Structure formats: C-alpha cells, structure tokens
Image (cartoon, rainbow, N blue to C red):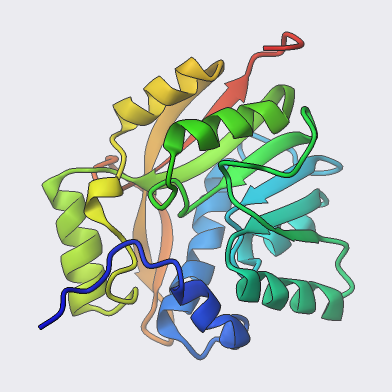
Length: 240
C-alpha cells in the first residue's frame, strides 16, 4: 500500500471552491481556530489602521477577521486557487484586501512595508524556516510585530496532530503535516533571535469546546506541547 505523501499543500487548492461553504469539516476547523488565535493576538496589537500581512492566508479566514478589526490587509499564499477564492469572497463583500500568490521565502514586498505580520498554521510547512523569518523581518517596519503559531515537535504533538487529528478524527486530510517539520519553541526562538526579533512568551492553543455541528472551538490551553502561539517584535532601530 503506497505511503501517504506528507506536507501536502495541494489540499488548499483542492477545496478552494468550497472554502467559504462550511461544507468541509477540516476547513470549518481552520475557520474555528481564528477566534481562538485572535483572542490572544488582540491583547498585543490594536489592528486599527495598521498595515498587516497575512503570510500563508489560504482562502482568507484570518485576513477577513483582521480586516474586520480595521487593518489594511494583504494576504499571500502559494495556493493560487485558494487565493482566487479569497479574492472572490472579499470582492463580494466589498472588502479592500489585497491577495497575492507567493511564498514566505521570497516575499514580493518592499522593505518595511508592514506594521505586523501574522503567520498561522504555516511555519511547519515551509521549505526554509530561516528564510521565512528573515523575509518577515525585512518586510516589517522597525518595531513591527510578528504574530504566529505552529506545532511543537515531540511524540505527544505527533500523536495529537497525525494519529488523532488526521487518522482517527479526520479533522485534517491525511498527509497534511510532516512531523519531521514540526518546530520546537527553542528552535523557533533561536531563528527569531538571529533575525533581530525580541520574542515574547509562548502559549498553548487547543480545543476548548464543541459547536452544534460537532466541531471543536479553540482557545488558550495550558502548556505548549502541541500547538503554541507567540509574538516577536522587530527592533525599533532603523535598519535592524
């Protein structure tokens, strides 16, 4: 029996036409994670009037939520069909969100373009974590904020995200993640330090309840063994 390919990023294009339909359980799960993430991110930033990049935006759930908070939002993702779905949904609602196709290792933006970069459910998928962190620092203005989450690398995280979430509960398609690409908080902090960031505390993100459809809702949880969120601030010195 052939082995399932890991770190399969084609899944986002495959479901692009149904991204906003609420018909697909794993896509609803991604949508349900947005309030839990923002409930914590909101305590670190006033989004109103800020230029914000949603790095790895897929079909636009986070981008639209930040737009609702009054930010000027740009979204970028390598999944062209997902970007097309994000654009169509934003246009239908009269939202002025810019969406681009591209990767975090080569961001198509000038230096110091953004006040904040949001990057969720992305870092564990990228080809070069150091390049993505370096590019994030480059496009941030001095004093700008990087808000992120990713998956820890340990046996418990592998059990929760691969065996339980993908194989048993079908919360994600099989092959979504490659556990070898998961990132320990100490590793991420090291890369952020190298890029000139001052990294704040990291906290856990996980299931907190159940919706009427039987889907999980998400929020802060004790411990960072599985999914963890964090913030990092670029030096406020010009050129740092």
